Length: 397
Image (cartoon, rainbow, N blue to C red; front, side, top):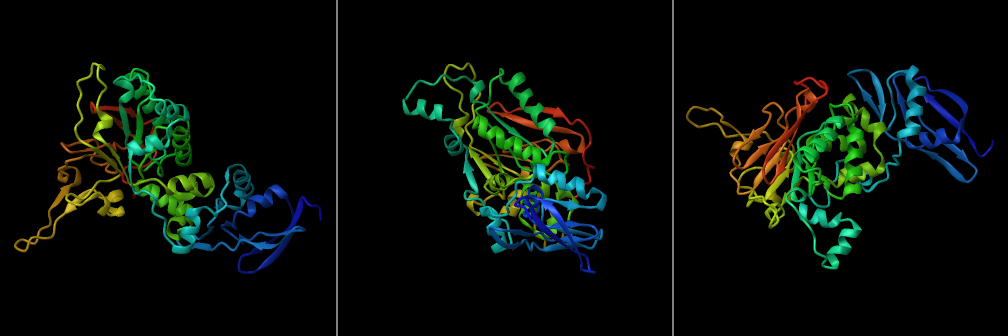
């Protein structure tokens, strides 16, 4: 056996048929990332290498009773034998998962996704953390910084749900039509970057690249981001669902590490929203702004907010009255009375919400409606139409 070859043993179905074939080294590299599962059989990769001991990836096989497909916790899912070769080729090109990141190890031990190191972040800290080296040097030298109203503005964007085309269009429209063709001081997304739409993995990679390139793009996490992360780490319930198939072949270790550290809230201090002197703008923003995916419980401190609340809440439901036994339900945007301004998403059915202390930006782009953003401090609404209907409006969250 040459160093470029190895023995591949496939154990097939209940009959335990054994087949042996010669497999090229690149293919084995892909196979070693995990077991290959397809609708008619499941395989394990055994690699014999003169320099290594026999290794076995015994990743757990999942049985999906609803559609009789065997699915493995692996970037490759083969729904049909005819697609087997095509999927392997796709895996070779796209998968860079080792399942050995800090988040993977945490999930393997605790069987739940890890909390980020910082659950409630601050935009001031994020901007300093991601500041370009040249900016840091200028700040250290106390060099005078020219500023204007446009480059002090902040753009907040609603639920993207894999709609990459619309996300790019909205950013460009906001910059060139509403910000004098200057980049924003920061761009913050309200979470649910993924699922339902056509390019979920691409949205993750785009936002990551923008953060690395411009040092001013950030996002909180939503319920769909959490579920996608769970699917990527090996959650059985999520892995069975076809909506997470993109996770298995579209995300790298770097993507997973990045997603695992997304905070649940980002606070924008009011001082960051004050316009510079001499800018000609009289817009004032005296409130801190909290960006969160779904909302916050009133009269509960930020550190005491439950993660499920922050990613899924839409309404407050009161305890039934002792007299008439009726429940009362109140929209979370109307229930929030400040003092901070909360900007959120998650509630596409209600669309754009503009209350005194809360603004909802999910306007159903993935349902064929619009992707919406708001420019602070003037609270200018900007939106773009969806290119098409990517998901039915009654799609289950």
